Image (tube, rainbow, N blue to C red; front, side, top):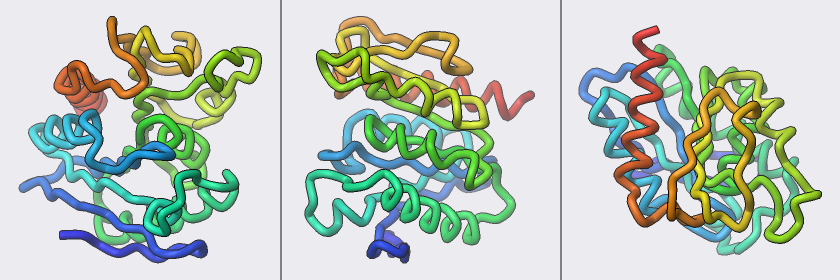
Length: 200
């Protein structure tokens, strides 16, 4: 059932799938022009539910307003932090992992320290605008303040981060920015990494 989340920049919405005996809370969000039903996000949801994670897929306020672009990073991050605080209040006992695809991965990295996330899952992290490698966003990965799993395709026009910029980097052959050729593999990689962390 959808949950409305209040933020300083309008409401957001979370689709929450509850695990029977949850071991963690994973909060995922979309890219700047996509939605929470992207194939990789659904595959991650299914795989993480299978290992006992409650998964919330969050539609950000700018998308609910019908905007195709997120606007300023500061406003987007403020809204995200407010939504995370509300979701954590509903699941106070669970470790928090947050993540998303593309622009959503950037938000998750930028706000991880502020919300005290235990880890970040960055799908199709857009290292730079297409054709402009000099405009690197690698600092966002480095400044997350916690371990980051990055999963990118080797044909992503937005580039692929360096191994040294993440706790784990998975580069999928033949995949582009949408990670839709084999989304189940994306889900498997996320679930495997999270299981390793839970066991540790």
